[in-house]
Length: 124
Image (cartoon, rainbow, N blue to C red):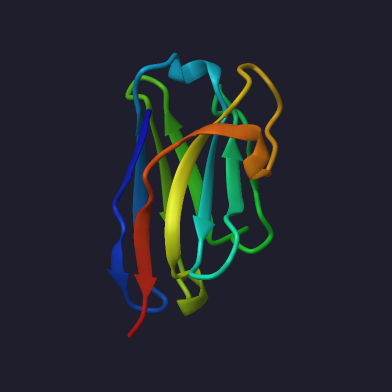
């Protein structure tokens, strides 16, 4: 399972770091993605970090503002979010790709283990 945490209220231009703690599977075998879902909208992919932490792909909407790091020894992935905007307000999820040892894909349909989500609100 996955457990996302670290959400909260932040002012525009601020920063926040989310954590995703994994258990119950061999963490280092799987790519991990971050997603978000705003009210009334579909869940969209933000990033995918490879199992070895060698590569991370980012969606264009967060490229250069959001940064992912991964600690395979701690079974945890982090999402550092900078220069936050009101439109970043959403529930943020981490997820595990269905297949081990595969290439990253920024599509929610390729992920089958999801954390419970953590709410990020960007507002003054």
